[in-house]
Length: 150
Image (tube, rainbow, N blue to C red; front, side, top):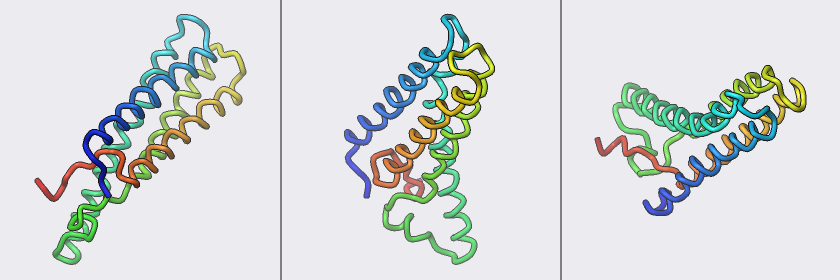
């Protein structure tokens, strides 16, 4: 079930700006020294995970539609009914991967906790962010491109 455009926009903006940029920046500010380039990575990491996850979600749904068309000659049920397309788990994958990469970068730089604790501090919120994005997408709170309308 898709939600209204205003609610979708407000939730997407909150997840992208507040949930993504601010959380990543706060983590890197708390763990790195002043003037560290890792703070820039922290600011960009989760919004980048959101953008890549959304593209992978659309890509997976497009591949599913193409495969279904080749196999059965008709659109799959989710494309006909306007339901939320499958593949929103891409948010979890991209967010966890990018957070792990950022955790390694920050952990290799001079940090306050050491390598493994710093890595864990980044992977946990990154995976949590991906799960939140996945759940929001599956419940219709993130925008879905209308593949059938094109």
